[in-house]
Amino acid sequence: KNEVEQSPQNLTAQEGEFITINCSYSVGISALHWLQQHPGGGIVSLFMLSSGKKKHGRLIATINIQEKHSSLHITASHPRDSAVYICAVTRTGNQFYFGTGTSLTVIP
Amino acid sequence: GAVVSQHPSWVICKSGTSVKIECRSLDFQATTMFWYRQFPKQSLMLMATSNEGSKATYEQGVEKDKFLINHASLTLSTLTVTSAHPEDSSFYICSASPVTSGSAGELFFGEGSRLTVL
Image (cartoon, rainbow over all chains, first blue to last red):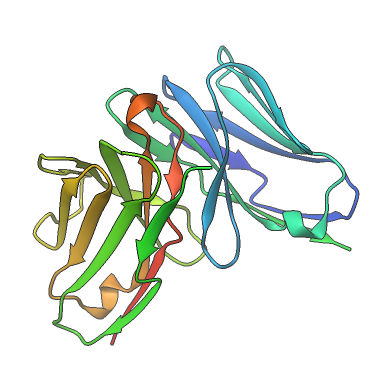
């Protein structure tokens, strides 16, 4: 069993739709990261959070420490949001665990 | 935002040769840098943690003699794939956290380096 589970693995949405990607983890963490990887390979860190909720533009990330669960929401989705979204958790001592990623395609 | 640069972006080499990939933090100092490997349609796999001025910490199953990591300064870490073979062909990515962020700091990723070994 992976320490970090993401769902769904693949997601296709119409432009404008509200999107949710889920991440569950089974280990104690110091932080959770949401990463975005575009087809070219480059990775951008979208959020780092250890509690509560963060918002950046149309992106919202939440985390529930007790339930060991985080969600990434995209409001008013756009084709440029098409990418792979990866959930990663860090533990003390620089231990990393990565989810397998969610491939999102937003259709115009 | 903080910038991490990787070089080269693409490299093709013959089997048996060694390839060096550089990871530089351009506008911040990083005590720790991380090296990852990614196979097609798979997620990132942490290979090793590179610590400035000391030996790298390798993840289980990663050959330290195969993947040499050097972190000579607070802005540069290098990964050398020694005696490369076709199975080493992959996408290699580095990331770094600013010194002030601590162990749970925000990660900044390089653009990645795609290695093809013929």
